[in-house]
Structures are given as structure tokens and as C-alpha cells.
Image (cartoon, one colour):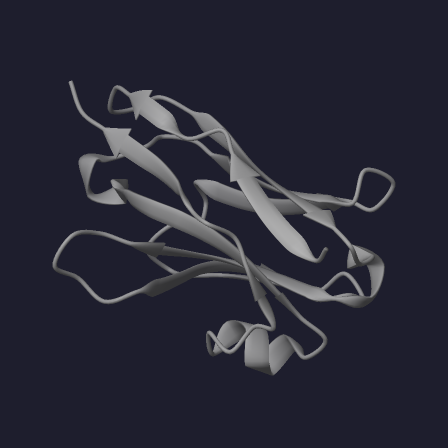
Length: 122
């Protein structure tokens, strides 16, 4: 069964850090582009950070310098390290995967996780 499962979300104070994980099963991430999106209540889904299969990455300006995407192909897992968190980072975070980097960035991934809630609040 092909699936992506996110974990690592939770409640954190402003300025804190979280590391989200996205574990893939049923397929090998090595050959896939991976992305993280987020969606806050009442807002459109927003692309956060992306990793191609050849090592290229892209990070949205809103989180650049604070969020870092990485992958561990041996564990078939992708991570999103989030530092210096702000209340406006509060959202449900989703990972997605596709053979196409462009499709992944456009939100047209082949596979999606169920999402993990991140809440930044004092």
C-alpha cells in the first residue's frame, strides 16, 4: 500500500522548533520529488519547501532561513526542520510526492499524507 505518513507536529511556543517527518511506504523516495505544504484555517494551501530527486531544493520566502527540508533515503523519510517558529506558522502541514518536481511544487503530487497539526502559541 502506497502512503505517506506525517508526524512530529504539536504545540510549541513562539521562537521554538519542531521537526516534522514524512515516512513513505509502498514506494521508494529516491526517485521522487517531495514537498511540504501547509494550510491554515480560512487560508489557501501554501507551498513551504521542496526537494527534487537530484538534490535541488526550494523554500518559500515566508520561511526561508527558518525551515529546512532534508531527506534520508535509507529511511525512506523526508524531514522539515522548523526553527524560530512564529504564530503565523500555525497550520496543518502536509507532505506530498511526485515524479515531477514541477508537479510537486504546483500541488499536483501523486501522493499526499494525512497532515500533522502545528500550533505556535504562548
